[in-house]
Image (cartoon, rainbow, N blue to C red):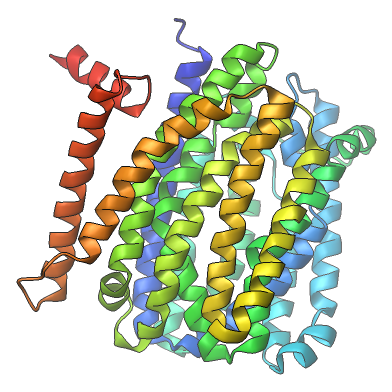
Length: 484
């Protein structure tokens, strides 16, 4: 197999992406832990309310320029400059709308301080829109170092600024400063570290729009799906209650979000290089789902089982109410991540309209579940509605992929059933594990050691009994034999 084969490119891209996301998440984790001790849930709730508005506007105006570049097999300078021009127009329009958003957001949430937060983000977003597309172009060529440097350095500066101003200001303004710096830094770094320069060009915008218009519709539905519960929570609860919900959801998602999206970062450019071979493409999707399931199911169930300990250790006792949300969103993130490779395949095959329909169907499932659960469960009902909708969407996505992309439902589910069963058993045993120490750090360490040992043994034994199918276990086994 050649050194630039799709398999090696995918492995290399996943390795770079995992390394990047790991360092970024570590920095974000340090930022969250430190600032949670300095600020109050109300501060986080206030900024999260503002970022809901920002996210909604950005999603409504996301024309998918970068996705179009990643999907196209061969790029010209006109393609690149047209994509940059389209993104610049997108960010300019978004900045203007965000600057005007307080006219609606302040009456909706009843918080005048949102105005100044939105104005700061608006100015920062306008500057971000002028940054270079060099990281995306380099990634398409399987050069991941530029994205790595920009992501790590940008996150490091943002975290340092947030923590510094957190101790100086001791309120929500520190979070806003960190977010604004994170938006602005790509403008400086992309042009400093790469010679690519853009000029205004609209020649290819119609072609980009023809491809991505349904992706934009899907993105809007996806945002409402991902953030619809937070929009409802921000309206139903106080800033402090919403702060617990928001931080709990982020913390619960963290373990799976550390691994899953990183593994998938190189998937689209790799699949685009072999898209003419349907059999190889489908086999690659099945293998990546198998590896994902093996890695992230135990993370999700482990988070669910140890949520009270995680919250107490990382955030402190004032965040105790967030622990329930930590556990539920650990599972939600697993379900969402497992559907991502199949959605990528649908995009690659040009089924963007179908992808859009899937998102909106999932949103309807969430809305119906919310209406049923929220009156009796409150904010917790919103979290459970997210889990129900995510599970429904995963099953529906697999069915659609079987029909339009000839993926095997039996193969997909059989690759996921074994790690799911082992992870569920592990989570149940960890949650009911007798504790021989009153020290929460020792309790948590015991849970991690026991759960990890059980799951590794489960995977090894069941892999052997099921005939040693191809997957993560076979890859690890082959690597161990090669090193002997």
